[in-house]
Image 1 (spheres, one colour):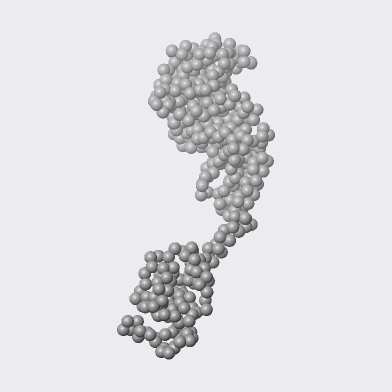
Image 2: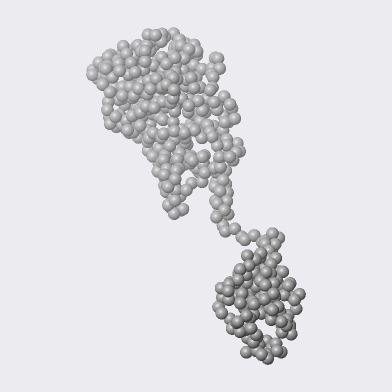
Length: 518
């Protein structure tokens, strides 16, 4: 068992300890993180760094995801996601807590145990059901994909603790969706489970039926079908088509009569599945599945689960230790950050160096945390610029003009004409400023204001009474006629005119007292 290591973050996934290793990739226990504390344990198939720059290997790796994603069946491990981040390329699969079938067979041999025929039939029948689903898979338009697994073997069958066998690893599968094309003369698969026509370069779905028949033969016999010393001898044996029969391979004295009777019943089925010519085999994996269940009853998932836990006890305990260790680490992390399920995620635009790993991920985490802290800090107020001072100046000027206008608008109507001793030039200047600042509305005077204007004189020596209306009319034209509402102000003290005998004059029949003579 591989000990847990520092996690590596790839996209939304945190990769923990490696739980399996192959020629092209390593399988990691991983965790998918989502919002609001959501998480899910998955298996991440991580392409080895030396292959990420190889276009041929990369295409073949991604083809596995394309093919597996089209197959939906309980006996096939589903493909969940594909992630490419910098130099990292991973395929995300559902995590199945179970034991690879090859490890169960090895444990059976080491413990000198015999797998019940019903358990063997259940495992191979489930594999055939998943295989048929792959063979019949179609794309979204309903077009057959023509998938051929090409690597059906005990290593690519995992039996869960739930008693359900599942087919996995479509890494060398062939289908119409492949972007990678196998070069002529290049063999893919395992020689011990390869059909004669596949060795000759012909790949058909019947080759998968042949491989499944070899798996069943070895499970029932308790040993390998071919005992060749090297690959050349193995290829020669396959091409010769001289296969040992099941009853020849099993010592009758070591099995019960009931088991021997079942083996004899399964012998014709195996002979048909292992026929040299593809046309002599079962037409489909489903046909072999039905024939197998008819020849021997399959064990229930509960019975299979019991044998998985018995034969795979050591393997399962090692896997569970890894899971417990990673889960404990995850919970400590959540407690340290107050229960929040926040997990650092690499920037997808950041290209990782070829030697990227846990250290790089930690640096990315620290950088992201510092960046988030700096973004949350309050921004300092910017110093006032030249444009701000100009705006302040404009506001002061406008305020001053408005103040002057308001002072003019609230003047006493009695001051419409210049008082004695005030020069005409000063009055003209004030009126001009008021007129320029705010254009006056149409001149309209109320009756009281008009009468007051008519009673005003513009002479310093008390001149003729007839000149007062003229001065008042001149003032009305230049002065804004609107009078803002205000509280009544006391009248100014009367100015001495020097001619108060008599202190009044007549305007028609109306008697008017002279200002300052009251």
